[in-house]
Amino acid sequence: MSDFDLRFWSHKAADWTADYHESLDERPVRAQTQPGDIAKQIAAVPPEQAEAMEEIFSDFETIIPEGMTHWQHPRFFAYFPSNASPASIIAEQLAAAMSAQCMLWQTSPSATELEMKMVDWLRQALGLPEDFQGTFQDTASTATLCAVLTMRERALDWKGNVEGLFDKAPLRIYASGRTHSSIDKALWVAGLGQNNLVKIPTDDNFAMKPDDLRAAIKKDREAGLIPAGVVICIGGTSIGACDDAAAICAIAKEEGLFSHVDAAWAGSAMICPEFRYLWAGVEDADSIVFNPHKWLGVSLECSAHFVKDPATLVRTLAIQPEYLKTYGKDGIVNFSEWSVTLGRRFRALKVWFMMRAHGLEGLRTMIRNHVKWAVRLAEQLRAQNDFEIVTDPILSLFSFRYAPDGVEDLDALNLKLVNAINDDGRIYLTQSVHEGQLVIRFMTGQFEMEEKDIDIAFETITEIARGL
Ligand SMILES: *Cc1c(COP(=O)(O)O)cnc(C)c1O
Picture 1 (tube, rainbow, N blue to C red):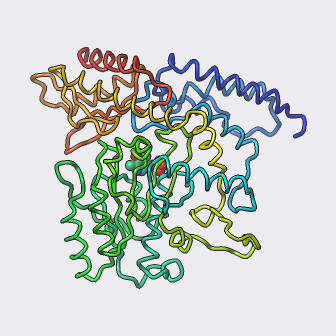
Picture 2 (cartoon, protein in one colour):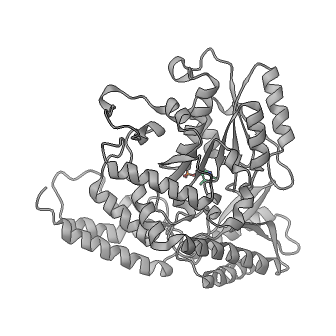
Picture 3 (cartoon, rainbow, N blue to C red):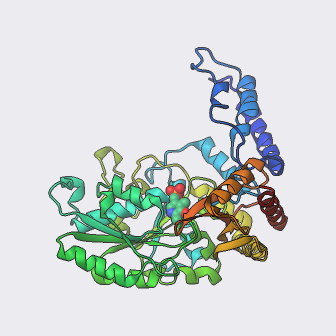
C-alpha cells in the first residue's frame, strides 16, 4: 500500500475538480444516458490483481461524469438544490483525509467542539432563541426519524425501546398532507405504522387547519389511542406549502404533544429576516430540522437538527454500552447519543469553511437573488398567454403549466414538455402533482447560478413548449 503516490493523485483530483466546475455550463444538466449504459462499461467481476491508478483514474474520467446528473450546474432547477460551495468541497477533502469516526468527544474533540459551535452559529444565523441546541444528522429523514422516535418514547414513558410496542395502544402522529414522504417513512421505521400518521386537511394557503388538528386529537383520545406528536411543514417539497407554526405549536403545547418542524429546504432562507414570517412561532417547537446541504452551500450530507431539550433526544437514543463510556470530563457531548447511527462523519468542518468563506451577508445575497430571479421568471411566464402559473412563488419555488388554447389533456402535454426539456439538457426541471393536476416545478437555488441563467430558462421553456 505504501507506494501509492497520494500527493500526485491528490493534485490530479484537485485539477479535475476545478476543470469539472469550469466545464459545468457546457454539460447537459440531467444525465443523458440510458439505463445500463454505465453498468455495461464496468467489469463484471472484481479484479484479482491491483490495477494502476492511471487506468482507474482514466476510467473514471471517461465513464462516470457522462452518467452523472450535474447538481452543481448553474441551471439545475429541479427538486431542491444540493449545492456545494467551493469552500465546503475543500473542507470535505480535508475531512476525508482524516476520515475520523466522530462518535464521541474523545474520538475527535475537534469534531465535537466544532460541531457544537457550528450548530450554534446556524442557530444564530436563523434567528432561533438560545434555548435550542443541536447536532448535525446526515439527512433530514434521519432527523425526522429521531424526532418521531422521541415522540414515541416520550408518549410511552420511555418504555418503547425496552418493551416494544406489542401491548401498547397505537400512537398517533399528526401532519398535513403536504409533508414530505420522510415523515411517513419515519413512522414505518419507528414501528408506529403508516395508518397512525394522521393527515390533517389543509386550507386555501395549503396550511394544516388548526381546528381539524384539535378535533383529530380529541377523537383519537376518545378512541383510546395515544396522541404523541405533530410534524409541522415549512416549505413542502411539491409547491412549498407552509403550516402556521405558531398555531400548531400552541395546540401541541396544550395537548402535551412533541412538535417537530420540517424546514429541510426553506430553513436556509431564514438567514434573511424578511422570510422568517414563513415560520413565525417556530421558537415554540421542540425540534427543528433544516438542511444546510440543500440551499446554503454545504455539500451533502449535513442536516442541522435543533432541539429544545437534548435530554429527551438522548434518553431516546443513547445506549451507552460500557466500552463507549467516556469518563472524567464534565460537560462533554457524545453526539452518537443524539443520532441513530453510531459512526459519524466530521460534518462541522465544511460548515465552518463555508460560512467563513462567504459570510452571512454573502449567503443572504445569494438567497435573495434566487428568490428574486424565481419571481422574475414566474412573472415572465405569467405574461405569456399560453402559460399559467399554478402556484405562486414561495421563496424560490413556483409551479406552472403550458396551457395553449384547445388542448384537452394538459397533464399529458406538460409531462411531454418536462421530458423534452430534460432531454434538451440546457436546464433541468421536475414535475409534481398538485390538486390532482400535473404541474412543472421551477426552483432556483444553485450556488453558481447567475441572472442570465433565468433568461436561458425562459428561452428553453417557451421554445420547447411551442415546438412540441
Ligand atoms: C428534501 C426534503 C426532505 C428530505 O431530506 P433528506 O435530507 O434528503 O432526507 C424532507 N423534507 C423536506 C420538506 C424536504 O424538502
